[in-house]
Image (cartoon, rainbow, N blue to C red; front, top):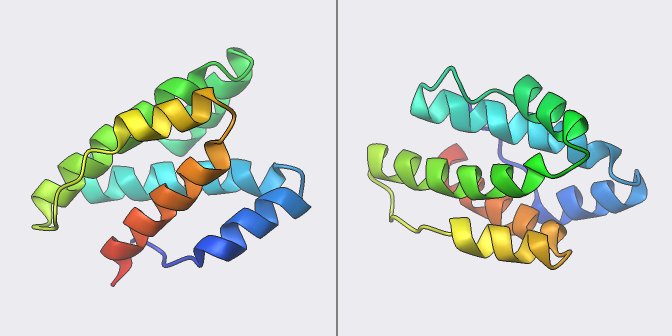
Length: 113
């Protein structure tokens, strides 16, 4: 099930908790996308573990993968299809991952309605 989260609250909590909420959010979004696509290989625990093991390098791959999997979910659920995977990745590379998170959450909120 996809949870509707306020984009502003996600950003504020990520900043206030110095990124701890962002780790939970990353886990939750990964699980929700896995649920939408019925994909058992894309899991939140794996994403967090690989991010820790690779000292954060995996996060760039995660942003691209989330964009691709969101596009597939949009196709499967007859939603307007947008492939934002490159946008997510470029923003993350330039240190603007929080903006990518806001866009991802906005796209995820479309599934919660």
